[in-house]
Image (cartoon, rainbow, N blue to C red; front, side, top):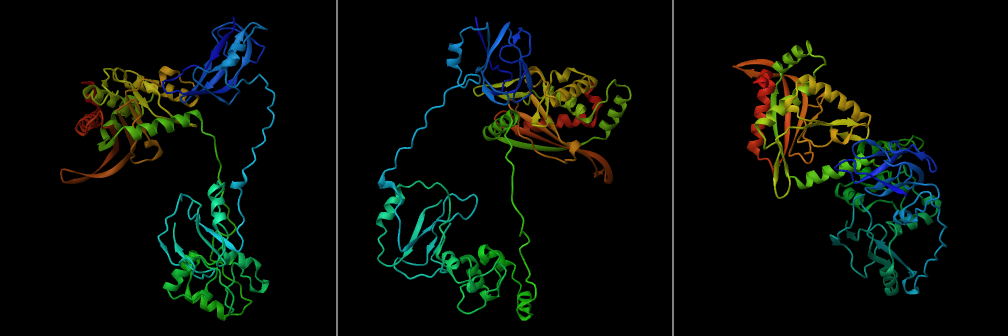
Length: 512
């Protein structure tokens, strides 16, 4: 009897998995303990075994594609066995070809909704004035219906594309146009060319304005934005002295900002053959960007940390720790320990011992209840290529510095190779994020669910401090504790930091 191989739940935060590789092909004979595929989750890349013997009859998800939890990714059975009932359940079978459906002709658009041509008039629409603009508000109208206007008049002060005015010959009927416009769906955001632009494009060549040429001849229209014109008038600047660097030589606000009277006046008095200065340093430069598909890990990081920041009311406590004795203790330990102990290992151990004394910090918000853990599992954030992952050192309070150091190194290596097993990146009750090795003085971190606190660790810095009226240099470490205020109050978090500080400033007390 055929068996469906489904996308397994490989972590507590997993919503879907991506097929990183198929190690078997349709028609291959597989055994129950064969590795048939690799699945990339939000935490690591895991191996999938079928747990049944048979022939691989069907692959339901291509390499690089995602599948939801419990979705069929493969079917194993006997050659020729009927698997149609599984295929009916599978939403997107890869191996089964389907006949292309006949193209469906679009229904004709009712004539009532067809666009109506508007003669002898130009529609002025709400312009897109910034890349984040959604709509604009008419602050003031400087012209009334029936007024005569020129192409460079300011007739409104504003901020999605919609008609804000129609300009044309007096008596033009615009009723039909407005009705048709109401029925149209605007497919793209574009600004309807204004009369100034249209007129400029049809003007004689002798009257055209080049981007870097000053328009000084009488009767020649100067292209200038309304804002630039207003600023120029307010500052008494002659428009003929300005050089436009906008489209088609249009004078814009930047040209007003860059205007220097002495430079402009001296340039007009020199020979016409003199080179024109270009004040636009961005000429010839191009904008570009690259869209990179988000990995499963990046998606889950975004989801979980957004949820944490939006649902958990964060507050932050900062404290400086003198690390002189901790540095001496580390040197002494490394002289006899089988593995080298890092400062992060010391902080993990000290945090675990402090959590013993402050169990309220070692807890989780469960909605109707608050869960206080009697065990201490420390998660330590590790940066990897796709984002970050938090390997967990279980029962850290019961382990020696050497044991913590050895386990931390092994977990970090497995994390970077995406070989962590589920029990190695789940179950944390407290998290530490250390950026000191990257020369960061201090920072604040987002609480890592289900924890109620996360400790942000900066670098150790020689710092002058005053002790007994004397200035001495001490090795200071800045710590920031981010707390979920639903679980931990300020005094509770502060008391935990005091205990942690005492352990780090005098490490021998951790042995008591």
